[in-house]
Image (cartoon, rainbow, N blue to C red; front, side, top):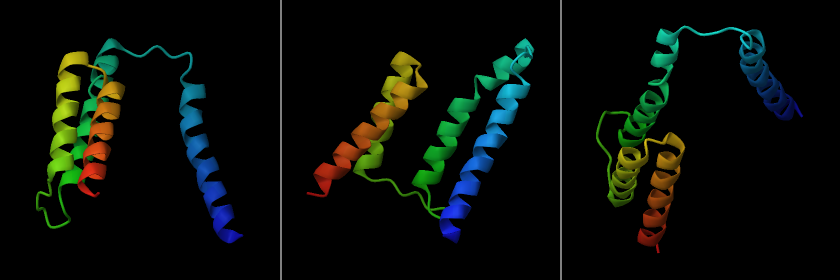
Length: 104
């Protein structure tokens, strides 16, 4: 029961910590410079996720065929569409497909 309570409280805390900013800043108009800086958040997060996925704790690069296929397809889709969601979905779909075929 204590594990369930911990998960429940963590979920509520996470939700409230995000909802506070949405509610508090609903009527605030952001300056153009801040909005321009926010455009770079998604690519920065994507880059951080990719680097953390492809490196070990010792700093070695760990890349195989599924990773290379996923990254290549995601790069192509990002270049053509400039859409972060489509890029992520395409890269993950290619990664999982290639990984599934190689593990048969």
